[in-house]
Structures are given as structure tokens and as C-alpha cells.
Amino acid sequence: MKKTTATGSIIPRREIDIKSQVSGVVETIYVEPGESVTNGQLLAKIRIIPDMVELNNAQSNLKTARINFDNARREKERQQALYQDNIISEVEYNRFLLDFNLSQERLQAAESNVQLIKEGASRKSGQTTNLVKATADGMVLDVPVREGSFVIESNTFNEGTTIASVADMQSMIFEGMVDESDIGKVKEGMALILTIGAIEGETFDASLEYVSPKGLEEEGAIKFEVRAKVALDENNFLRAGYSANADIVLEKKEQVLAIKEGNLIVENDSTFVEVQRNAQEFEKILVETGMSDGVHVEILAGLAANDLIKKL
Image (tube, rainbow, N blue to C red; front, side):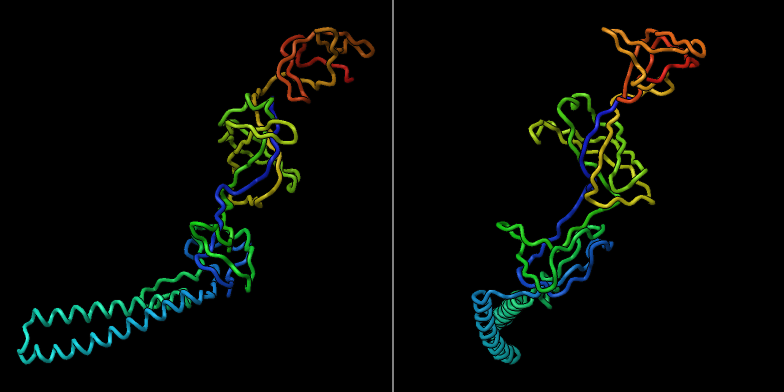
């Protein structure tokens, strides 16, 4: 088997940073790292610290809306009595009724606006902005804030404060770097054998699914990023961030005659091995070699399966 090695780490295929929609102080956190959550599950509650200028304007608009509503209500009641006494027409009465309905809607909108600024929630519309909820199923990887921490809202000009990171831990990938000397031999679909430093005596299969078209300079050498899908079953659990080495299988042969490379004798441009003929006698035999994995080398010609070679 001929292979090259990539160094990297195990990461979730999709990791989501969940942000707050409002600025304020974290009032309550409902989850801990390691817990599984579902889409829409409540993660945290933010206590809003309202902007005083914005709140003052909203309260002023509310007072104006209430005055207009009270005036429209009184006028509607007066015109309704005239309509019932057949003094005014229905068309004229409907004009005052429309003014009343519009002023009522403006009042309710002004009340909701004040509630949103002060509390982050509107009881009338059911709209809530200070409750942070999960946007996908998965496991909570990190909660970088604590109760009492100040958070900034996510908007067009600001990324916002991350409340929690959530990822699907059943869909993991290997992300690593391959040296430029080997990248030309690497193709999508190749098999990988992963060795994880934190898990001794166990390997994991993976399938290469991405090879970067652009190299990056790393420690004076040009390397290319590769990603591979890790094959996991229900009994496997890999933590995000595990460091790993990946043996990328460039070429593989099975059921071939092979010996250790250390037993080869190289003279000029020829390769030999010493084969035992009797208890005390060895004969130097010319052999033709094939694929090597750095430890074992394939023998194409010159040796038989039952030959005993001298170990060097």
C-alpha cells in the first residue's frame, strides 16, 4: 500500500454560532456544553437595557397616540348617537368610525413599540427578541457567555456576541494539510485511515471529498487543505478539535509477495536479497521491486513465497 500523510483535526461538518438579536445583559442561561438541543429550544434570556433617547421618543409617541385615540373615541360616540337618531347619513358616520379604528391601531402599535424597547417582547403580537433559541438540532459545544455578561446584538454592522455554539456531532469531517509534493497524487474519493492522538489503538475510516485548488504557506512550505468525511456508527463519539493524522491511500495492492525494505541490498542500480540455501549458506538473488509503503516493499520477480531471506 502506497500512502501519504496529512496532519489536521476532527471538526463538525456544520457548527453554528447562535447570536443575540438584542443588546443587553444575560439574565438566564438554560443549557450547558454537552447537552443536546432541538431546533427552537430556548437557550438563554437577555435583559434589555433600553436606549434612553429611543425609549423617551417611544413613550412620547405613545402619549400622542393615546390622546388621538381618546379624541377619536369621543367623536365616534357623538357621531354614533347622531346616526342612530337619523341626523347624519351612514356614509358620514363611517368616516368617523374609520378615524376611530385607525387611531386605535396606532395606539396599539405605540404600546407594542414601548414594550419591545423596554422588555424585548410584545404581548399583543407575541413577538419576542430577548429570548435566544437554537436554530438547529445538535449538541451544545460551548457557551462563551455567563449570566451577567453584557452582549451586543447581531446586525448589518456588527457580528454580535455568540451565546452558544451548536453542532451535529454525528456528522464529522477531517480537515488537514497535505504537502505540495504529494498533492498531485491526491484525488477526491480516495480512502483515508485516521489515527487520533487521544484514542489509542483505534483507527477510523474516512473518504476524501475536497482538495483545495489553492496552496497556503505554512512554516516555509506550501501545503494544500483537504477534507474527508469520517465514517461513524452509533457507538462512536469524537470530540470536536481532536488532532489527527490521516494516511491517504494513493495505491493499494492485496495478496502480493512483500518483504521488509530493510532486508534489501542495493548495489549500483540493482536490488538484491540474500536467500538461505542450507543451514549455513546464503545466496544473493537479484529481485525486481514494486510498490512500497516505507516499511514493506512488493517483490515482482526473483523470489518465491517459500524462500527464506536473510534478515539484515
